[in-house]
Length: 359
Ligand code: DP6
Image (cartoon, rainbow, N blue to C red):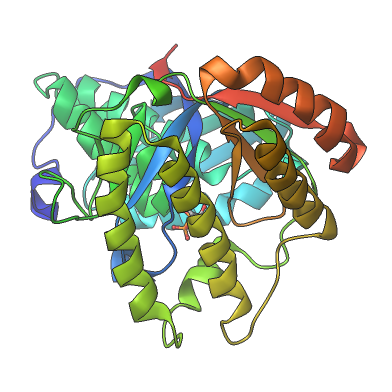
């Protein structure tokens, strides 16, 4: 599918004002997106678990306005006016306007809130941008009721990608692929698709406990980090590796081979951070407690034989992953040994989820 197919060509004048609300989840990548070309095109395919508990809820209220040469919107975050978010949303609107040409015809009020603490270091761009993209698609549907559910979801993912790359993996669940991969038919650089192959029962209801090691603002944003992959000495090799890892993961997801799964996803997490540490300028997002947690997980895994593992996103927090049938013992270990490394003892119990919902 080409970009042009997402351009809304004609639409009725059928809606003067209204409001739509969507609740959209965050996601955690197993194979990481790190490095992009122009127009938010990823350098390599990635795959993520859609989460269930970490969500953004957004209400988009719209009313027809007089002149239509500027974007007009207000942002209310957790009940208070929040102008800090405006530049990112303005950029998003500018990027998507060609596909949703009605944006300048309305004044918008964007009311948004997260189920997780704002300053938790959890990326809210995936859930935030996907929720907003879905609300915009609801307006498109009001203007053009013929669109199918699959077009709706695909275009929502396509638009979300233009807000934040990883957001395109937050529309549906439970495993989403973004980026073209030679063995995954239908995979695309333009939007996320549901993982199309067999998934072993071991991966159903997989758990993710997010340990909040550092709740401060990141010193280096993801966008800056992605850009540092241009001219990075190891970039090309990394993109080849991500493609190979995806091929291996297809087999692992089918057979339920948890040991290879663990090796793959931990290697992906450490490679992501290795890319940061070897870019110019280099930077480190892990904190001492990130490493303490990783070492404690390795020691416990060896001693217990359980399939507990970790992954990281672009920050110091640790996502502890474990299968449903080992959850009780893993949670006990997390509470007894790992929570002590979290800032103010904060952590979030999450698990694999099934995508965004209209409220
Ligand atoms: C490390 O999607 O936040 O979480 O496209 O610039 O908004 P932008 O980047 P973003 O990058 C996420 C990177 C990651 C890995 C991943 O989610 O695949």
